[in-house]
Image (cartoon, rainbow, N blue to C red; front, side, top):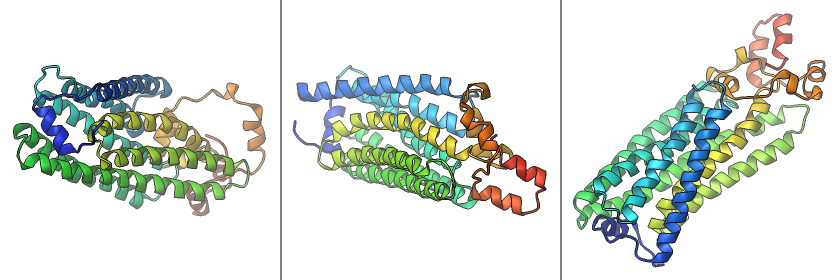
Length: 323
């Protein structure tokens, strides 16, 4: 299978050359089927995992999962020469791309609230996501539509350059958010005097390394000259990252609920804490209930600050209980 860049592939697809060999067609079909399967599974899992269908975390997970479907559909309609106008195909690709990529970053930002209470830093991360969305999505979209209108012009060359820039840009953005999360989680677990923080930390680090590997794989495939494979592998990678989100969330909830009263949590963290489905108190193991209440439990730093600012003894004892 010959190498290609965004310039050559975009031009050939707009001119209805289609997939050039059976191997490539098979790879496209396999990636599309896997991405669609994962997307449908994620949508179902999202509805069944949340008790209340609201909040940033729920909607970002749901939207990013749904947007995988039109993104793949647009490329499938282009690659397999279905006769559909390229304008419709590109529109499906762009709309799905917006929700899939930026939606993933919003997912990362939403769960960051569970381990980080620095409002300025949280607001700064959100601004970074918004600015990157405008600076990377908009020019790429303009160049892509320009390539549709003028396949043989400089638009295709500009799209090739911008495609590589936005790919690295969004990868760096997710790396920054994940690094903040890992750093704050490490600090949080070091303060916990009981339990198995090292085991939880190792699991979280492994999951985040897997997410980073998926991001780097997308970038490497693009830069070695397999653009067409990259655009179909990307939704598979993002669907796998969304699946890993549920594994991460389970660990984070254990940490965040270890000794934090919901009234002392940041609103976004409380929103996640209250909407995830958990077993009822009667279903929990005994060693996670009354024995934990009889001894000193870990409380995150932001609870210490509130407690030291003048809370009564009764309030402090309530903070030490599980929500």
